[in-house]
Structures are given as C-alpha cells and as structure tokens.
Image (cartoon, protein in one colour):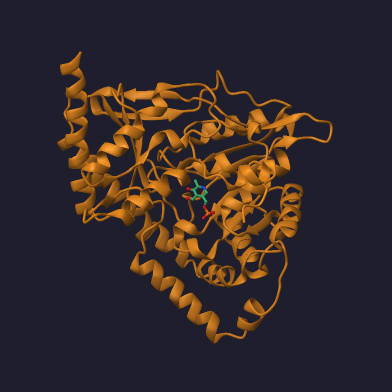
Length: 427
Ligand SMILES: Cc1ncc(COP(=O)(O)O)c(C=O)c1O
C-alpha cells in the first residue's frame, strides 16, 4: 500500500544530506563484487575496549543493585532519570563553578531529538505568521541540522571566512561577523563545537560574541557539544565550555561509547528547559532509563571523564596525526590541497581547491580504487547561495585502523594527482 502523504510526511520521509549518501555507501559495500573497501565514511565511533568495559561494569552494578526494577520496570519523569540529572548537576557545578539545579537539565533520547524539539519550538512560524529563523552561524556544519525543522525555509546558514596557511597546506573556518545576522526574526542559533564535519573549534571569544548578538532578542543559542568536554572530550585544542543565560549547552553520550542507548543532555535556563520538556512529553514521554542509570554511575565515579581524556581523546588525536602526516608525504606540494586544522571530533576535512571535478564525482572515482569518504557538499544545510567551495571538500572519518588510513590517503593522493594533471594536460 502506498499511503497518501502530507507535506510534512513527504518532507520527513525524504533522506537528506549525508543520510542519502549513506544509502549509496551501504549499497556499494553490499554489492561488493569481491572488491574490498577501506571505509572512511563512518560517523559511528569505534568500540574501544576500555570504554566497553566501563559500560559493562556499570551495567553489572545496576544488575546487582536494588535500583534495577525501578529503572527498567517503571515509567519515569519526562525530564529524565533523577540520578543522572543530579550526577550531571553535581559534576558540572564542581567542574565549571556553576549553580545548576535539577531544573536546568533535560535528558533526551539522543541529542538529535533535542535539536528537533528546539528547531520546532523556537524556529518556524509564530502565531502571528512571522517566520523565525534557525541560524547556523558557520557553514559547513552537522548535516543532521538539515532535517530537524518542519519548516525547512526557516533554516539559514552563513558562509565563513577562511584563514588559510597555504605553505603548510592548512586552513581554518571562522564565523564571518560582517555577514552574520541575528535579529528579532531569529528563533534560535545552533552550531557544533568541536564541529562535525570539519573538526573546527570556535574560539571562546567567537562563541561569546555570537551569544551576545543573540541576547538582546532572547534568542537561545544551542552549543552542540557532542564532541566536547568533559565527555567525550574530543577536543584536541583548549576548549572552555561557555555558559550563559541564553546558552543551551547540549551534550551527547554517543561518542563516549553509548550511541545505541540514545542519551542527549540539555543544560540551560529553566524556562527553555521547560519548553523542551513539554515537547518531549508529547513526542515520546521520556527517554529510555537503562542507559541513563549506567551513565549516572559512570559520571558519579568520575570514570567517564577520566576515560574520555585518557583513552578516547588520544585515540582519535593520534588517528588525525597519522592522516595528516600521510597526506603531507603522499600529496604533491604543488597541488592546492588544504586540510582543516584538526582541533577535535572524529573526522578530517580536506579542501581540494580549484578541484576540476565535483566532490560527488571525486567520491565516485575514489570508490573505484576501493576507498570511501563522504562528499563535502552534504554538510552545508541551510546555505542558500552557490559557493564553489561546497563542491571541493571531503569528510574523512578517523574511525579506521592506522593501516587503512595510510593506504586510503595514499590512494586518495594518487587520484588527486591524476585528476589535477588530467585537466592541466587538457587545458
Ligand atoms: C555534531 C553532532 N551533533 C549531534 C549528533 C547526534 O548525536 P546523538 O543523537 O547520537 O546524540 C551527532 C551525531 O553524529 C553529531 O555529530
């Protein structure tokens, strides 16, 4: 049966951004035809033995304790499981010298759902018919923001400025404050820090400036810290979490080893939390409690933060170093390739300036030599203007073995050389 769909039904059943590419990747891997692929496309974190052991131990404690029945055999509060909320409040108050109470915290089934609630509670049409914009201040950014609004025209992203160090083949994006508009028509602001896909970390000053632009209009600023400290602490440079009246600090336990348990956390002003909590009650009553119960143990014992800095961070930081040094050796110095500074997250972002073909064509040709990356053009949700740069970038996942990263980058370098040479011969 093919049911008739509403406008929203059609919109939400479409695969957008990277999800559409992922379908192509899964089909490529399944078709295989005997070809072995080095898959550098995944956003799924690797299972690190120490991290898995932590969650096993916490699960064992839960199973052995008296709390078990209460956790899994009963409904709970829409705001989240009390033990996890108080573990986070205590940890953050001590760590960052805050005065959080339980009313400042909401637990959601993964942080993606949190962005969905916020995008639709604050963005879209008001009762009087005004369009409130969801502002992404620095594009490219997380592709998942592309599908969160039920009113797609509300999403608007801004081109960044580029800080380029051509001699060392490095660059960094910065928010372009000369273009960025946050006004009474803004519903909320969202950005990831560290950023998926680029590994960029906006500076504390840049974050404070964005929050200050939003404050006069009471606009919530959601700082997506899915890769931030204290867990999973996937920042490779200094990063101070910024808090404030209009800042919603958003976290995820997915990259700290619990993606399957779906745990997102919002920390912020009580009134903002209440709006999002009601949204959640209507949508799904509350997130699953088993994951929350084991997370509260890992946070209270301090082990989650310790494992994050001692195991998770160095693991991916080393992977980035392998990738960077392989590219430096394998790529021709004369070609205009630039790697985004590796400041965090689990990806590298490569810009092939003046690339003679599109990122999608490059992705297809790279597949032919057995390497899969993600074409960069899928990471510019909300950016309306055409920009050639959008078709010149690739996201390369660090969730592979060192050998795979080395071989993958060597093949990528060879292909890059061939593609640039071919056009210089033609022209
Ligand atoms: C920047 C960013 N934000 C949010 C999410 C969603 O994470 P989850 O819903 O698993 O918490 C991801 C997932 O990869 C991400 O990369």
